[in-house]
Length: 329
Ligand SMILES: [Zn+2]
Image (cartoon, rainbow, N blue to C red; front, side):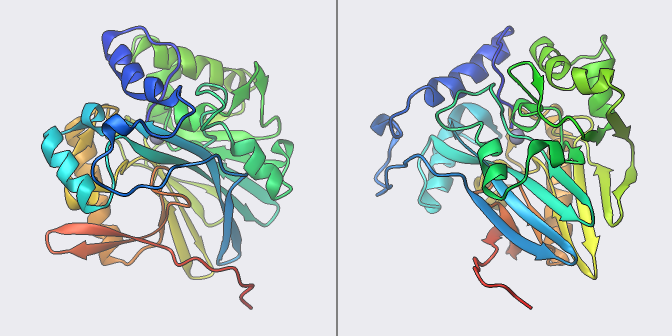
C-alpha cells in the first residue's frame, strides 16, 4: 500500500481523496458506505503486539494501526459491483479498514525490524503507532540493529524519520536495490515526484550516513535471514525469509492488500508500479506458498497478518495463524 502526504499529480490527488479523506474522520466508518452487514463499530486500540517463535527467532507482529481504504477507487480489474459482492462474501463492506503491520525479528544479538509503518505521514488517529508497540515489548528504537524495508512506499518507510529525527540511530537499512535506485538515487527515474521527495526525507538521512544497503536477487542479511527481490508492486519489492532450526516464515510485503485478491489474484491495486508484473508475482507467490504450506506474514492482512494460504479450487483462502498465549517448551 502507498499512503503519502504531499500530493502533486492528479493521480496522487485521486489517492489522497480515496485514502486521507476517509482517514481524517475520527468517527467510525461512514454509514453511507455500509451495506446490510452487521459490522461492529471500530474503536482505538492500545499498543498491539503478537509474539511467537520460529526456530531460534522470536517474532513480534507490531500494529501501526489501520487505514480505511476505498477499494472501489483503489482496486483494478473488477467492477465496483464485483468488489462489493466479493467483500460481502467476506462480511465486509467498502471502505475497509486495512491493517498496517510491521514485524520485529529477534535472533542472536540482532533485532531486525521489517518495515516501519507510517510514522508522522498519516495522522495520529489511526496509524503511526509502531513506537508504542515496540515500547510495549520493551524494545527501544536505538536497539534496532537492522531495518528491512519491503518496498519504498509511505506506509513502510514513514517511520524511519519522525519530526526530522532519525528513529533508528544504530540500524543499517536494507532494501531491494531497484527500489533504492528508482525512488532515491536515480533522479531521472519515472517514480512519482512526491514519492521521491518522501524517499529523500525518510531514507536520505540514513543514506548520507552510509547506512543504507541495497541488494539484488537474493542476499543474506543475517544468519538464516535472506532478502529476495520480487518486482511488480515496486521495482525492488522484497520478500524476507527467515529459516531457523528447520522452521521458516516469509515476510511477503505487499503482494496482497485485500482478502478479495485471494479469490481473484488477478485483481491489482492502483499502487502497483507495474500491474501486470504485480499480478504475476502474486499468482506465483500464492501458488508456491499454498503448495508448500508455508507460514507468511503480510503487512496489510488483518493484524497480526500471520498465517497460511490454502488452495480453494482455482482460487485461494487466507487462514490466520491460530492464536495462542502459552509458553511452549
Ligand atoms: Zn503497503
